[in-house]
Image (cartoon, rainbow, N blue to C red; front, top):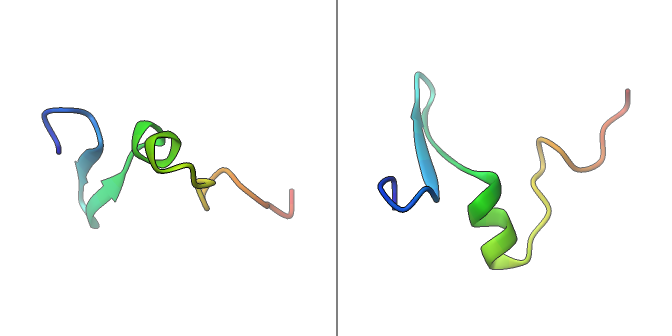
Length: 36
């Protein structure tokens, strides 16, 4: 999944990429509803 671009390694662990959210038809919580 990392090689295909669906996951990325971060210091906090593995995180889904925008590509993974688009593939699953979901909204990325980091880019979804924000206060500002």
